[in-house]
Every structure is written in C-alpha cells, then in structure tokens.
Picture 1 (tube, rainbow, N blue to C red):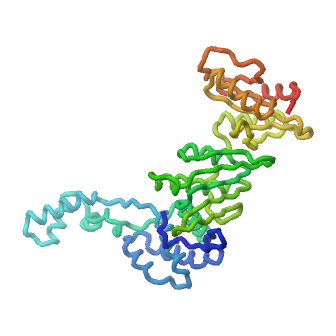
Picture 2 (picture 1 turned 90 degrees about the horizontal axis):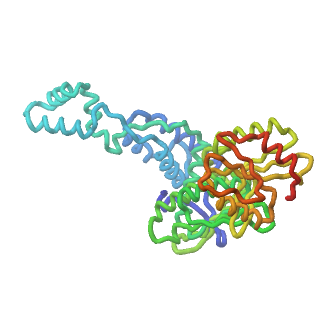
Picture 3 (picture 1 turned 180 degrees about the vertical axis):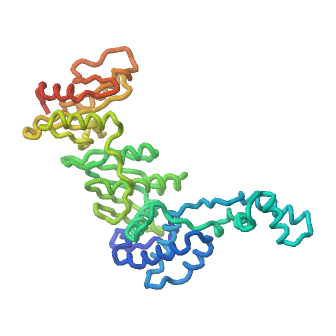
Length: 388
C-alpha cells in the first residue's frame, strides 16, 4: 500500500478528488523510464542513489516519488547468484577464520572449491540484500502512458484502504465483479436498480472491520481494474482521511489501469455452443451474460440470451447447469418465476445429476453430455411460443 504522503488529492465540498497523472506528466515519466533503463543489470543501491537527485527535467516531487515506488513494484525482485549468498558467506568467512592468508588468497581458494570465478563469488556474497539486487526491466516493457495509469490505480486502491463502505453502480460485466468479490471473500450485497439496466454492488470497506484490514483492503482494491471492462460504472466510497469523512468518486473513463481482459467464456463448452448457434441461426443474436435479473431481493445471472433479430419479443434466457439436484433446479425455477419470467431454458449436464428424483414438471430443459447441442436449443426456441 502507498504511504499516506504519496496520496495527493483535493477536497471539493465532501468529495476527495485524486490528483491523477495525465498527458502533461508523460514527458518526465518517459525520462524516469530512460534513467531506469540505464541501470538495468546494476545494483539496486546505485539506481536509488541516482533517483535521489533531480531528473534532468521538471517533475512534481510527490508524483515522482509515487512513480518511483510504483515502478519498483513492477520490477522482478529475484537475483540469480552463482552461489547462494548464505552459502557464499559461510565458506568465505569460515575460510578467513581458519587461515591467516591474505584476502586475495581466501577469495581464490573458496572460488576454486565452489567451482566459480572470484568475480561471481564476490557478487554472490551479499546478493540477497535489497541494495545488492540487480535492477531488472519490467516485463512486459512499460510506456509512460501505462506507468501513469498504474500510478493512478495505486492511488485509488490506497484511498479505498480508508473506506467504510463502497457502492458501485455498474452496467454490463456485473458478473465479473460479483465473481471476483465472492472469490476473494469480500462482504457484499447485490441489487438491481429499479427501472434501470444497472446493478448496485455494495461492499464493506476496510475501515468498517476490526481485523485483517490490510488483506481485505488488497482484495477490495483488486476490483478497481476490473471496472475498466464495464461499459458504464460509478463508484462511490465513503472514506476517512485524517478524521474527516469524504467521498471518493470514480466513473467511466477515469484514467485507471485496466486488468487483463476478462475471459469471454467460462468454459470451452460455452464458447463452442455460442459459435455453433451463431452459425446455425444467423437470424438470432447470441448475447453472452445479459443484464442481471432482480429476483427475491437478489440478482440472477443467465449465461446467454438468444433473441430473434426481427422480432425482439422472441427472446430466451439460457442457463447452463453443472452439478445439480432436482431441488436445486426447483429453486432456480422459483427465482425466475418470482421475476415473472417464463422464457428460461435450462441446459443440464446429464452426467452431473447428484440425486435420483426427476426434474420438476414444466421445466424447459435441453440435456447434454460433454457438448451442448446448439441445434437442439435452436429447435426449442423456434418451436415454442415465447411468453416473456
């Protein structure tokens, strides 16, 4: 987490407005990256000594310190030594204690016994100390634009460490956020906004907890780069800065570094079905992860929607079910009925039935084994009246 002195923001009423790095910062960021490039392969202490002096161009001191810290996080930290440093020290210091020979003779004797050159042995001696680690290039290489975005992301994540509650209004890719929140164990609730296509995700912030706040804050911060893949979002975080409650606001288009692209499909089965259905049914659109549906105080997420291009009333929702029991399917159907939707098709894996009872009557089901038959789904949607 960034130290408090690196958090630069303004206060506008009750809003905390972060000072993001932008295009005007790219020239000095480029110079910083060039200076870093010069020291690749040299000890870390030499780079740190250089960066204590000013850059050969105008650079805001606080933003420069922020960029140096973020850049340091992105470098590989492992240093490969010819001899493990602890082993090198044990042999060198042990040999020096056993003999009265000159240092050059000690180095030569130990290097020969270990089968390395004297230079490699000397470089290995303190190779595990931070200042002696060799500077390495970030992988993949960084541009000034990317470094600026990563700095902005680090600032937002550090501000969220001071949040008591975070509310995210999101449209599109909601499932990506919910999946990550559940996977990381975040405390969250989810609701559909009345009359709108967006959903509201509400999460407890680290300042609302009594323990494990650092781990929780990191997990919460990991949601931020995922927001960049949502078509529209608005984040409001109630934060505490120096005893004062302020609101951090983040929205679509703000300059934060995005995560790597979320997977379009959860499995090869889903990808293959979508491809085959599009080929077999050119008059139908296949929508992956359509908007969530409000049901009994929660949201449900269909896997697909298929909709006829010339008759939008002909729209079906598909949910692919893995392991299941008849009771599970019954509860699933009840959720959709509570939302007054009857246009659901359940695609059920016959090999993952975990009970002996039959499926509930009235369920529209396409059974499959290993491969979901797109032709069977198409036949069902074309021959069954849709009462959406």
